[in-house]
Image (tube, rainbow, N blue to C red; front, side, top):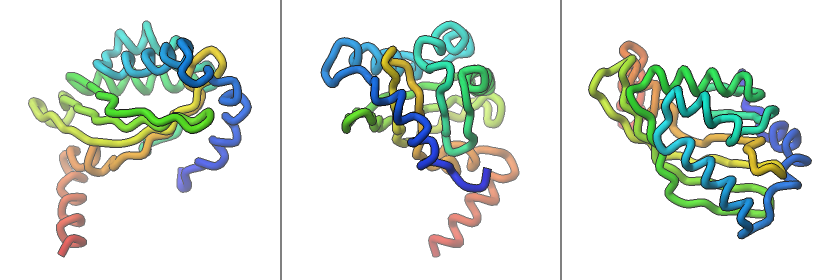
Length: 170
């Protein structure tokens, strides 16, 4: 995908988001709690058992690496992510709601088992979320530095990215 279709994804999820849980309601608190709990300590088992309660069947997920459309594509993506890492932990730092849009600031720690055994990385980002009337995510659009949070830790490309960053910084 060459261009991130953010405006298109907003349009595609606007009708479902119009039915989001009311502000300060128990339904809103439950939806946010499910999302937070899912990412607190992601394992492939938790993905298999909990994802259908967090994401809608037609959910859209863009994490700066790829666009995944529908639960049938999101589930295996998160399962593979959890399996490649010894641990994935996301801490929700704060949440802002504006109408039917939620902006979630987070920090993520990943223990890299597939690339750098024993190496834990931390990155920070924000997610734009939209929920449907059942309190399930219909849009999850991440904003984070995937070079720092992922690509710099790959064996060959990581060295190249770090070298480019050093040159640009001079």
